[in-house]
Image (cartoon, rainbow, N blue to C red; front, side, top):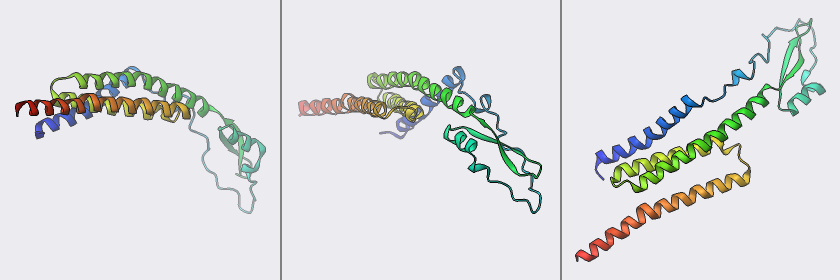
Length: 191
């Protein structure tokens, strides 16, 4: 393949998913951690008063309960400047729920767009443009899957990867194998 066509394939494959990702991000903003959580879990560190033995706050039942709830323990200082457990901040749980929902929605937005580009790449008659659209669609599909992958159940992960694998096999058969078979037939007819 000519270097110019190869460069076009790589340019389309990189710029297409980047362009779609930027548009989706502009129209559907990702939730920000700061909107849900205050980052002041630990107050400014104070050196304990000399010759004072500070209790181990990590052994308290409240602290352990907070950790078990996947919360973030917050602290304060007593009169001896010893750090003691204060409260359990559960804001990260709410953020994780919203982030998970966002990742799911992003998957359902980007995956169909990616499939459209892949199918468009199959049917484009200009080979290097078709290849660029197919690669770009595949990269976009991979990105969408990876965003939602950790939030999927194990069965859904397997199903999504199976469907994507079947799509790739179909593309390989439709675009590559049929084309090579057609060119072989043309070459045998000429002889």
